[in-house]
Image (cartoon, rainbow, N blue to C red; front, side, top):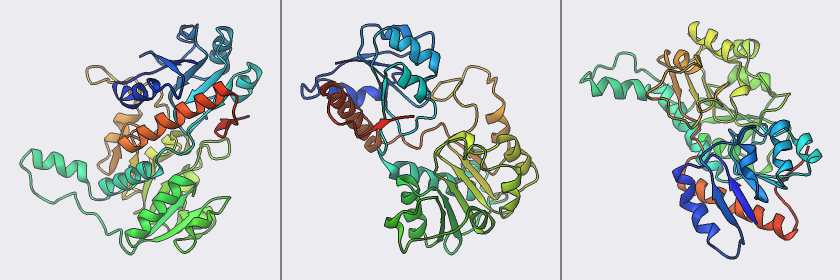
Amino acid sequence: MKIIFYGTREYDHYYFDVLAADPEYGCEIRFLTANLDADTAPLAQGGDAVCAFVNADCSAPVLEKLAQVGIRCLLLRCAGYNNVDLAAAQKCGITVLRVPGYSPEAVAEHAMALAQAANRRICKAYIKVRNNNFALDGLLGYNLYGSSAGIVGTGRIGAAMARICHGFGMTVLAYDKYRNPALHGIVRYVELDELLRTADLISLHCPLTAETYHMINADTIKMMRDNAILVNTSRGGLIDTDALIDALRARKFAGVGLDVYEDEDGQVFEDFSDDVLHNEVVPILMSFPNVVVTSHQAFFTRTALQSIAITTMENARAFARGEKLVNEVKG
């Protein structure tokens, strides 16, 4: 089976090169630095499958071009699939496989790191010390111990975050349509409105769907405590950016930590250090002293990369052998 690997970075080779050389998988990988979109889709000519990441364009026009050059399988090396037109994939005869759970602890640990960095003004403190300024003005935070955490979405990642918050000595509230029995004795499930009104730390861990799009908006932000910390390591579209900025200008939050944000696709994983950003979202968000923004890196640990590579290659092997596809995504 020949796989065309889009959006290759140096770190992708760490584990995929080793696995591709294993005859047990029976796969040949052709690595491309270009990301998948309508212009690059024809480069998959001669392949059986393509491997794409969360920032790839998997819309109907792209899938149609992939099908035209003989692609039968889309291997997502990520958990999310909101960037894939599943109806178009089915119509084109393309099977979509994903990595549902590579390392939930990696994302949850990053979420807590964002909460702590925003709360204790770690980034601001670092810059002050670099400038030989050891004054504590503007660095005041509060204890997480004894406060309350609100976990929105209690799948693998949300459950890992709940356990971390519990370990910090926090009272953990949770909201999810489906209760996770593994969290019995750790969280108390409540309605979303109650969680937003009472939690000191609100961490989002749910997929982006039509129902969850802009679930954090002007109205729901008003429900939150003025000194709440808001963290998002899931999908940028969960938060209405304009409403968030308005709230920050009104000094609504004690801190905000974002690993994802709306309209990040054009710049995520790219280096613009010698360029000018045309997207104004990040510069505006970074202008607030209580906001920490990272580059969609919550997943980025050695453990997670290894797990992603293994599951992706196992998905490819199962597809090639006609075996049961446990990680298939259907519309």
